[in-house]
Every structure is written in C-alpha cells, then in structure tokens.
Length: 251
Image 1 (tube, rainbow, N blue to C red):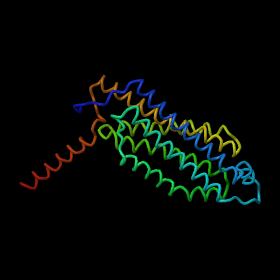
Image 2: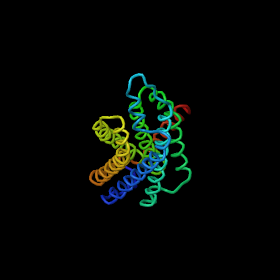
Image 3: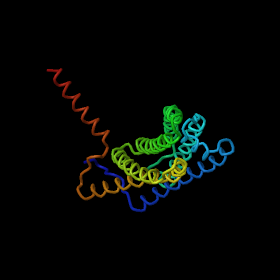
Image 4: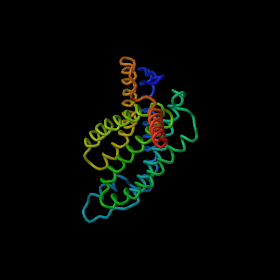
C-alpha cells in the first residue's frame, strides 16, 4: 500500500462535478442550435435530408463538412467549459494550466482533422451515415478529454480515473445508442444529437466519479491500494531489476 491513499470523494463532489459536466454539455448544445439557425439561411437542412433519401438525387459534401465544423465547435465549447468548471469546483484536482488546455485543444483538433474526410466520404453516400459519424466524433472527443484531464491532473491515481472513464464511455454508448435509435427519420436523428450531447458529458463524468467514490471506500475498508501511485510502483520495480542486473554483471 502507498503512504497517502486516494483522495476522499464525497457524494457532494459527485453531484458538483456531474452537474458541471451536464451544464457544459447543455451549453454546447445551445451553441449547436444557434449555429444551425445561422446556417439554415444558406442550407435547408430538412430539405437536404429529404433529398438524400431519394433515389437519383446526389448528395453534397457541403453539409457533412458543415456538420463536422459544428461538432468541432461543440467540442471546443464543451471541453473549455468542462475544464473551467472542474477548476472552479475543485482547483486542487483540476489545476489551471495553459499546457493542459493546450493538450486538450490539440487532441480535439487532431481528431477533427482525422475524422473530417470520413464525414465527407460517408455523407456523399447518405446523410444518415454522417449522423453516426457525428455521434462517434462527439463521444470520442468527450471521452478523450476526460482521459487527458485525469492523466495530467491526477497522475498519482490515474488508473482510477482512466478505468472510471472507460466505464463511463460504456454507459454513455448504451444510453446514446438507445436515444439515437428511438428517432426514426434522418432529420429527427439530427435533432437527437442535440439531446445526446449533454448525456455523453454527464454519463462519463458521473460514472468515473462513482468509480473513484467506490475505490476510496474500498481503500478505507481493506487498507489496500492496488491502483495507487502506479508510476512509483513501476519505477521501484525497474530500479530493482536494474540493481539485479548490476549485481549479475559485477560477478
């Protein structure tokens, strides 16, 4: 066991962080709604979806490209707010650091660059396809952001938060897939994306904090800390291996 133990997680901590992630997701959705109204003057979104389902009518690469930009802007707003709210509610855990924010922004930009060609390729076949890509894009950016935040802010107990984030990813995929499938038409699924955004952010944050809460109480009950300061444990093992090698070479 390590000498410190995991940081105490209370139910109020879970509530505050989950509420912050939900607010960040909702504000991100509001940004998408305003952008959609703004862009509706240049492209008729319902008509574009209707046309894409009719045989013999070619789809355009314009809307997939616009959707990828909208998702990028949503992710930028949501990421920034998640980081800001996390710092405001728990400055000890989520430190204000331009390097950390820069790494998050780089991840979002890199993801956008990689996935944009997929938007266009799939959109040229059927606009309904790009909605699935948009859902994957949003989930990937949100999940990746949580992972990066925890790695750079909670390196002593990074495995707790990484495992919790993966559980949150699983729950969010189940919830968002259920919501997405409940809408039948393509345009309705587009509207569903706006509702899904806060769900993704909320689910990952809630589950990872519940996992940390459970691990803290497991530590208090068992006095065992298998996930604590994993980097230190690896360093100690490597030093022991190096020492053994030096002893063998000295013989």
